[in-house]
Structures are given as structure tokens and as C-alpha cells.
Image 1 (cartoon, rainbow, N blue to C red):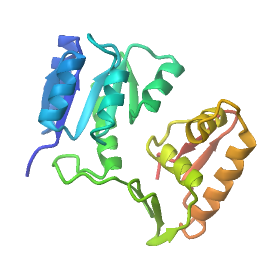
Image 2 (image 1 turned 135 degrees about the horizontal axis):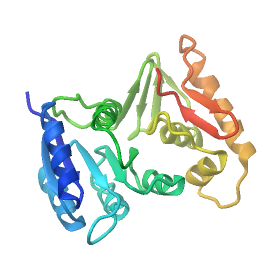
Image 3 (image 1 turned 90 degrees about the horizontal axis):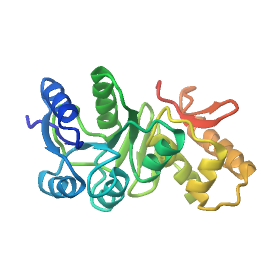
Amino acid sequence: MAQTKILIVDDDVDISEIIHTYLTKYDFSCQQAYDAAQALRLAREYCPDLLILDVQLPGASGIDVCRQLRQETDAPILFLSCLGEEQDKISGLEAGGDDYIAKPFSLGELLARVKAALRRSGLPETATAVRKHILSFPGLTIDLVNSQAVVDETIIDLPPMEFQLLSRLARNPGWTYSNEQLFSLVWGSESIDTRTVAVHINRLRKKLEQNAAKREYILTVWGKGYKFNDQL
């Protein structure tokens, strides 16, 4: 069985080597890049199943690299950064990142995040497979290509905005989005209407949970916003 391929992109050679050594112990196949140009070249040649991408790189930012790669691949991208501010995390996720880990971090946490990202992408944790544009959760499958959601084997009717809300939340389980962030990301407007977000969330919940054996997919984080349930 072929190994899952990970591309580690960090200009700090010591950190890169530590990550490489640790992940290879868990049967991952790892390549390393140390600047933006090398990252883009290896991503195209190596075709990794997942990328670990530092935000601050020589040549261009990791954010710019992510934006470019998102036009070519849907492999999960995990950002690493010493920048821990909320806006930096939001920028990484908006660029197409799947997760954001602030330095310093534990290797155990990194491994857990890698495995979680691979599970969400539909890829086995220890073997390469044909990449699917599918997010899978208990009782729920989200097809990102065909803009389709299936609950307990039943296709549910989701208008475009409801599907965009669902896919945005489901790509980053556990990440809390404010009403303002969701409105900006989904409706693409600077003029915020938080009532619109609440109405669409309520409609989405009813459709997802009417036949879902009491599962709660979208959770309210009181005083902050909404998140996709990462404890399913």
C-alpha cells in the first residue's frame, strides 16, 4: 500500500527536519521545501496528499502560495505560523487553508491535525487514493464539485447560499466563524446583515437534522458565531 505524501514547507531547516523525522515514523512519505518557488515546484512534481505550509517564506508568503495552489489542487493545507492573531488565522483560511497551527506547537497536536484533515478530505491516513471532492461525516456527505449534500442517503435541496454556508463551515470543523465573517465570505459584501446569516443557518439546520438521528452538525457559539461540530 502506497504511503500518504506530505509536503513540508518551512524556511526554518531545524523545524522542517523535526517535522519530517516525526511524520516519517508514522509511515508518511515526506518531501521538504524551503521557499515559495520550491514549494510550488514540488507541489506540482510531487503531488502531495497534504501540505504543511509556513506563512512566512522567502520569495512570497505562504498565503500567496496557498492561493496559487488552490487553483491546482484540493489537497488539505495546514498553515504553520508564529503569527497567532485571529486576523492572521482568518486570512489563512480565506486563502484556502484547511487548518492553522500557531508556533510553538506540539508534534502530537500536529499529527492529530494532519490525520483529521486527511479524514475530512476522504483520503486514508496511511495510503494515497484517488482524490475525491467529498467531505464525509456521520450521516452526512458533502459533494463540493456537484454542490450536493446527502443526509442518511437522502439528497437534500440546498439553494446556493445555504450550500456555501455548509461547505464553508464543514471544511473547518471546530473553527468558529462570526456572523460578520460568514456574511463576508458567503455573500461577498462589506455591508453586513447578520439577520440574513441567522435565517439561512436555521433553514440549513432544519434540512440537515430532520432525518439525522438527533445529530447536531452546526453549533451556535454564544456571543461569537457558529461552527461545524468537530465531535461527531
